[in-house]
Length: 342
Image (cartoon, rainbow, N blue to C red; front, side, top):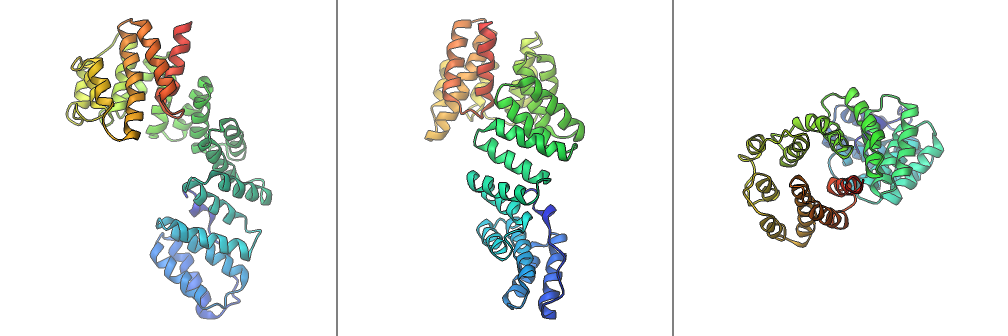
């Protein structure tokens, strides 16, 4: 839904009753100024009269769908996009819009089918390629995602989000050097993209570029315990461990009893590994799984810093088995195990 506003209406033909046309025109103006409530009211008034020509009805349904989506009324948005497609099966941008709703709802196969149709109708649509790539990535089909991001970038060289998301897909399949290049480019086009900077930090860490990783993690470390922790890990690898910095970045904001507080406490020497594992076992089933996988990874890093190689390998394997594939701890555990084998 990020790009719905880029897919605004066709020019309204002046074939309907004056009141319907005026309401539809006013609805378009409301969409353009992002007054979603007014847009919904005006398009509803125009559609309820029932005298708009079919093509104009399709446009009105599309634009009211945009307003519903922007108001977090996704089921109503979906119904409007369905109606627009019934009225005009070749309305290309509506397939992209409906695909975005399906993607937001986690219905990725349906989203991909809509993006496929959009691309059949207009092959040069970089947004459809990008959005389809996002659905493929969500399904773990990163090679297909990369191919779609490639296509989007051939059509729009400065498409910053495509570089960022392609970097994420490269990262997910272990192509770290290419991921760094994409994150570099994403930052070049948007210097304040903190997510791209941190993603580059993770990949630099996987590649053993610890000084570069520490620099990337410097931004945001005071506001995010995990970023502070990764900066500490990176600095530790180059002999610049600074527990005082880690404490300053986290002690005020994070209760040591609240996750990931126990991990911070471990690296500050305030908790033992067994206490961290006990803390990870608290909460509902989902929390226990996620905290358990993270505990294994950070305990492995702790063991590695203490040159306890056997324990580190065992714990990295536990993290690799227990962490979902999209977790940075999963990707990092695999990279660390490969490095230790060398």
